[in-house]
Amino acid sequence: MNQSEAIQILEKIQVEYDISSINYKNKNIWPILRYYLSRVLMNPDKVPDKVELNDGLVQTKWPKISRSLKFKNIFSVFKLPVLYKTISQQQKDFKKLNAEVIFLSPSFEPYPDLIDNKKYSRYLDPYFETFSKNKKVIKVQLVKTGQLTGDTFVPVHKINQDIYFLKINIKEKLNRFRKKLGTKKDIIDVLYKLNLYCKSNEINFVFNSWLIDHLDEVNQYDSFFYEILQGSKTKTVFFEGYYSPCLFGLISACKTLNIKTIDFQHGVVDINYLAWNELYKSVSYYLPEYYWVWSKKNLNEVIIHNKTFFIIPIIGGNRWLGKFKELDNSLLMKKLTGNESVNYDKKILISLQYSVFLDHVLSLVSKTIDLCSENYLWMFRIHPLSTNDEKLKVVEALEKHKNIEYEKTSSLNLYELFKLADVHIVASSAVAIEGLQFNLPTIIIHEQGIDLFLDLIEQSIFVSALTPEKIIKNIQSFQSLEVSEEYKIETSEEQALKQFELLTA
Image (cartoon, rainbow, N blue to C red):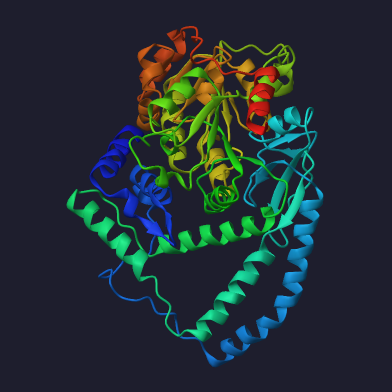
């Protein structure tokens, strides 16, 4: 299912179903349910493998605990004083920063880019560098016990989240001894009714018991951030990709403490920011207050899909693009091949995505190379977040072909490759929009990508191709039209600082 089809289903539910009734612990959880629903609708193979709800009316009983485990749990109570002391120290250390503005990175923040062999977040760090010139800004990095974060290009204040969760888990175990039966009857009833609606409307999705675990994780993060931020000077929090239990919890805590939340655009304006029309304000509890977008096109998309203004979009631009757009590419070929005089008729960049699109792209492009006799250099860039198994899959798929490059291509900065390439091939990724800023002709080779970029394809700014023959034809002849002002990504430091000052005033 593509994004447009999923949006139609979401809009149907929001019109026909009483979304305002979907509550857990006195908060409307539709944004959380909606995220998981949209994810599964678009990738049905990713349905969590859990047991379905029964009749929706049965109390949930805690599992039986062995005698030895009971003693172990009771003994864990003696850890609480140490935990409280450590947590108190972390809170004091954070408050000493006197940070009115913080950038928050979850413990799973991948830091996919490197600068001078130090880890760098292309979404948060360029803004941090820009904003910290005019005002005190602190970057907070959540870490887990034993987590190796390595050296970061931007200095961070680390907070260990595990000790908070250990305290919460110990207290929950104590509650189990005080009350033999735990109940989640209310939320089970809510999910059961929604499941009946989905079933009667032939929506192939069931909210299973796994979702309750995610909701509880959100609430744990809510308590965690509330403890950190309460009593601090923090007025504004920036982050990217609001849709995770960690950041849902952050937003919830900030709403309670009246702290502004701003989500940075980190790709295509996708389903998570669209189709929020005609809903009650109470439904916006887990949504960021502001959404920092790249271009006028993105601004208009968010406004059209948020007529009740649950997410207020502002054009702040892409500072990473501004940081690298003026690269001198005279030595890039030598950097890539070791020989600046090597000559190819065309240099074709294939931006590989991990997970669902990888097999499709490798198969289709491999067939294209087999049919192509021209003197082309095929530059495959492996996604920074690809697993070792996925990287091995790329190597095995390409080893029989000539004029292939993937090792140096995967280590170069993406924007260096945009400057070097003559043609760009991608399945369904925001890098197509970024490549557009370099006037790079882009070929979209997956149906989800065609749906995502349909407006650009209809304007002949992008082109679609689903067969090897059509890909070759477009490599040879397609020239994209010049991008209009609407699609141009703002890169100026002045614009970014202007929006920052408005948000932090």
